[in-house]
Length: 559
Image (cartoon, rainbow, N blue to C red):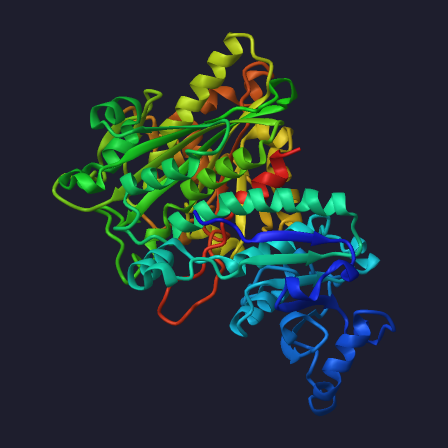
């Protein structure tokens, strides 16, 4: 990962020295802000006046104007049309979503400054109107962090581009778009600004690991290379321990569903599967409020296996690892933050779902780690297979900790780009599916609340009895059906029922609400197939990657 730009904070525009920056990006709501008779608005209004006279549309979108009073002579005006209407939320500060037509104020403004040649912009955030607190489905409490994350996103250069530039340009390669950022927010104290910067930079550090891995093509990020990337990123993070399991016999014994799903990849050692484990321990054990067990799907390329993806649907399947990327990113962010409220145990299952003579086949019955007989109906439903045995392992560890006397609440989360159905259902949004104990404890709703604050909204889907009935065996030859043989997009409740399969095949069905409070284990499946990418369509290229759910998890689980 690259080093972040230097970030300097100012609680007053007057603190900003002209020589410290080479552009000012002004983010504000409403054009009337330029009519205020005070510095810096009077200077900005004077710079903008000639353009307003000749362009009636001026002030409705990002604009660069010459302004001698600011560093570098570059003033970028980046307005937000509204923040307090029915469907407005904090994404108007950051997230570009072409489908919804949302304004990406900070990122667009900083990107425009970079295009103009700026490398040390000052980002001025005008106070939000009090009316934002009346919007029913919005939360602007983290808007400063969201704004800084937007600026850092504009500065970020992907790993594959950094490597290309370094190889071709050597020491002249630009591997980070910005050298520094001066953040000016007059509505906050210096202490509040420093706190926001600390959280945002920790989140960005983890998010960049997720993006570095996510943007890697199938050869740049094979399972082993994903493990190497995580190991390098975690080496200097306090409290975070790394382990990788590569031995096929050990994977077959401990993660049999992953082993069988990956069988076709055994033909080439460079595509063999592996399991990465990350353990984070709070620097203040007495402050730990919960132990999170996080399982990530890391399918570095998904051909569909013998149930081959056809009709162009294999395109973009190098992104099927983004669940594991997100979990690894959150673990790194938590370590960088030195968060005291949580302990983490992460299991990331990496494989290439290849096709070949040794492929897993529909009609096979394979045993899970929990001893459950799984009837395979579709090898393209591999994500639930690779995560189920890690979930079973987490279940075992929670029970062992309880038996040893631990009173720390524990919960299991799976994170995956699992289904196309979730996109059909919700568009470019993530969704949660929780079991009874998690619903009772509002674990899934915590993610929805946090997602609103960080511009990564999640929908809360509810698991129903039909989901369990769909995968329940009707014969004595197997215990559970892995899937049907249709794409999830053509299947009723296509993103909900996979959670029911994971519960049954991992043994979590013994830890429902009905098992009693002492035996119950909260479980939340997080499908990020919608939220992991931004929904943009850059010609024939692939969508941008968002880093979801790193920021959402930080908001939900950090103190």
